[in-house]
Length: 485
Ligand code: SF4
Image (cartoon, rainbow, N blue to C red; front, top):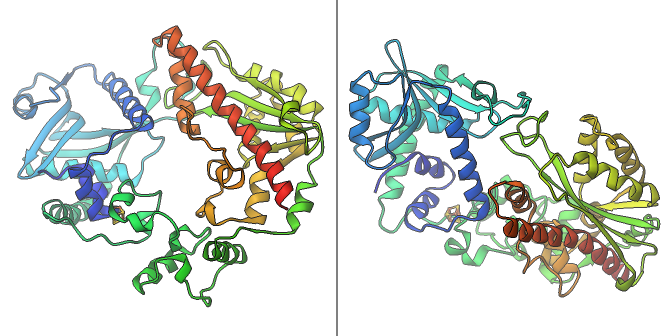
């Protein structure tokens, strides 16, 4: 057993999480695998900044690292391995500078973050214990100001920026020392640290081990109440109040929270009478619209920047009347068949639909933001599309959030949650692509020249099915709400 930078990071959230992560390996999902692959590509590009660098072996790298440190064969060492006692680490880049070494941790993020600094200073902590004189600590990150001119490669000095965080050394090292102590205590306990239910189990997202650790708390807890006051929630757990049904009536809550809570306690949905008037605001013909976009650390098309959102797909259902039967719904979609910049044809294909619609129904402000981005990027047709959407838009998610208090929402109003609760027999289960993140990865795979034509065709079919369900779901929810209101 060893203490790694990952353990030190996880222990900040929860000691038991660090313990689990070392003993119960969960399979990586597609998103995690893709993130790792992107991190590796950034690492490859970062090394190009150091022409006289030496890549050390990933496995059994301790002795080769010692030999390289003792010689002057290279100005920079890549993936150097270190171990002292139970502390182990590997460093992206060690650059030789006067008096010692500069440690550089490269990340695919777009700025210096505290979690990156923590990792870099954990490495510093280990290396200094190994007797390596560290004279500087830097974070390398993606430069979102870099406009890629196109070509076969990215300029490693333009794509990546390196910033020194050396002045934070005195602040970080005592924190690392304390975190290492907590990690050691957590990792080496046979039965693991205590399972303490608190907001850390649900924020920033549900803990991967929630079902294993607290099977009783995967739904119905006070943490599943929307717009909960999170600090109050931890205090309530300390008093033994874990489930929404046990919440005392005198706890101060917003009106919407109070109504959701009542629905959770009774098991009966509460639909505000105002919903009828809100639904009546949709004019027909109505366009139910959904977009898919991709943002990549490595610019995809000449003239674009890292993480610039590229709008690559839309799906639309057109209804001539609110209660039009399914057999008469019209479905139209756009997804390019080649790997060129899709944004101009995205706009030109969408524009006539926006012109003909009386209302444009979307779910969340996402679509408006995307057309705003196309407008700002001066993509032909972007301005017209943006203006039309702004004049005709109606947000189904807002209508639900303000008027539907459903026990099955569990504090969330994403369409993946609302669809199965409001429309019996429909959900995203069974689709190959189930969320926007997976759609981004699928698109990148589809346009990758190394993907076989057969695989690309299958991915295309999966993307079309996913985006189509988004707008079909909106229509079904809209009609179900009209019946229920
Ligand atoms: S569910 Fe909560 S207590 Fe259990 S490991 Fe996760 S964060 Fe820790």
